[in-house]
Length: 358
Image 1 (cartoon, helix red, strand yellow):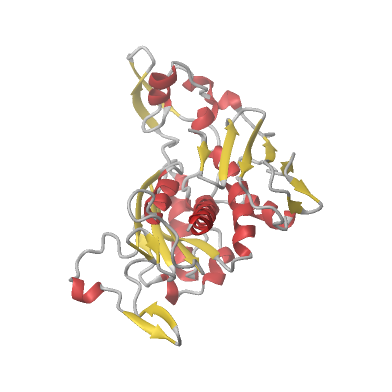
Image 2 (cartoon, helix red, strand yellow; image 1 turned 135 degrees about the horizontal axis):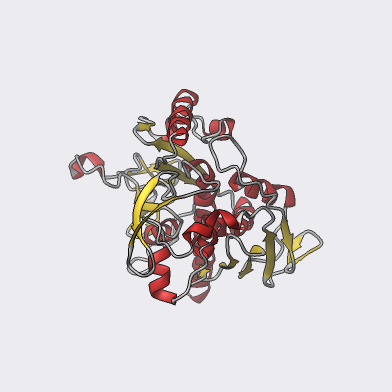
């Protein structure tokens, strides 16, 4: 499956050390103003080599649109694009050609396809996510016209985490530091931890929180196709993601009388006094903020000695070389936003079709 979405659909292609990463976006509404500076900035937020706590691989990540845009607007036809790879160090992976790296997709890819591209993980590389950021950027531009805003941020790195709810932080500070955390003091602690881990050749994981504001009530399906299930599917399809929760999620130390979201009339509009549900009830958005958290494991590539086996099942060892992230969180923030944007826009378009059939 290389295609995501129902109506707004992204099909991506390419490998980490191939000629390019690219995609085709189908189902994008026509007439959307294409802000090229905004789209390039979204790619820059994901780009490698942007700070001392990310991989030093240098890629310009410049977007080239091939179709579907005319006179600065989307035409409603398929939008083709590509981002050329220019800074591959394929030789860094020569020693891994016949070895299965721990916690990577090497073994499973070999079992599924009988062949694998060992250079940077090939198709399983997180470099593929750049195509998602293009789709997400276009989705954001469409959602902007609907006054729907999406922001994600690092809320935990290893044991260091934000203690307050998202609405108690100034989210305009997210881009003010390398780790993309809205709490400057916690951000400094997270950066120090990542630097320490990196100096030892190790890696660390954490959590990204995402908030969607302005979503209208009524998006999602009551049985299959629940909105939170779609968001979970989107997030769990991101490299290194191990968990997803929305609303109060796994905070189960409360009784129903404490966490039920009571409805009230807010100047002629139905609202809720609390938002423990995370903006989704019965699989359908209720008009409140949608918020969720995404857990990322430590990056599997560590620059340390590890025991493993080769393709013949013989015991061996490896020590990875090359340029790798010690923590994926800073560069994963725009990816989480992109997948959320594509999901919300897709479900908005589905909702329009449902209403048209009534």
